[in-house]
Length: 289
Image (cartoon, rainbow, N blue to C red; front, top):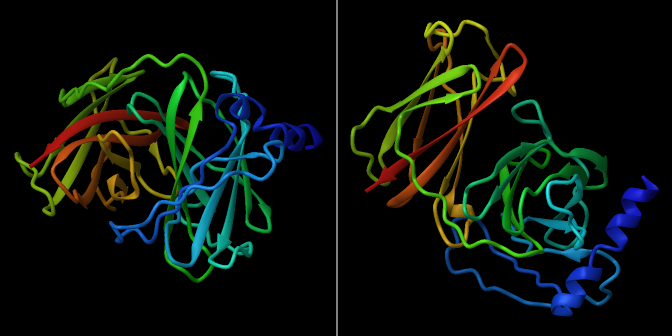
């Protein structure tokens, strides 16, 4: 633990060399599309690098601390502190989908995805080790539920230093893909998806060796599957994030979700399923008109 805290304390050294200050951003509730952006200088660059904090509601705020000297593809200590609007730590949380917090880490080009579950240390503080596979910009969606409140999402930003290769994730609209020993066929209830329209997203899982419907699916986070959706955008935002819950009572090997897409654009989907204790992460694209 002492080494963990020491790493956090030294977190801003590299970023100070590059920019002399850190930036903090706050955004109002998810439905406020006109939130002001504020910038502030960190008073002590050696106390931790506060990276682009976005507030998910008018009552809670998540603050992210990561070391500035991140080593690509190595475990990096990440700390998230949840506070109320007065800056007081929120101490109690309710679990949902069997966890107190779901942390979705994606590269802004949507080429990298990770789903983590930070450990709660008390007094509003969550800790987890994350890996960032390449230099560039990353967005972290922190999904949590303060006690007696509704599920909330805070959007946090960080940057991994180093030479970044400009890239954009190419939308692959193939609806049948293989992930390890699992073939996943993806279909939608509507041939053309329109913004604001309710739609079913359907995953059919088959064993690669036999092409038979898999019968070894186990619950993942208390459900038949887990689905995260993000809209492709130069700057990922709360409005671009969808966390869908699996429908119950579907047949073996079939996992369905129901959702709406808020606006036109290209969206990437990550469906996760538990095959006999091993998590299968599948990714697909949809175009929304």
